[in-house]
Image (cartoon, rainbow, N blue to C red):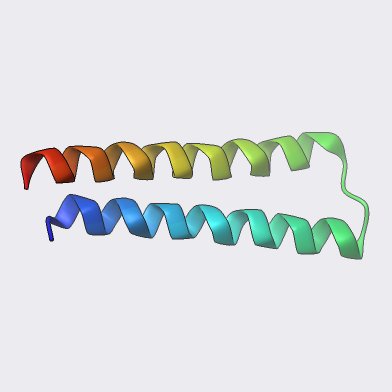
Length: 61
């Protein structure tokens, strides 16, 4: 397995962790929309970046 595939998959898992932590914090106490949007954008960026890394790794490998 190409190292970029591994890094991409790790970024995708990190995206799941960011989303989960945001969901747990939102359930415990209400959060303002700016902080939720920032967590959403970070999780989306990690997911998209991980997907691109996986595609590049698969095409090189």
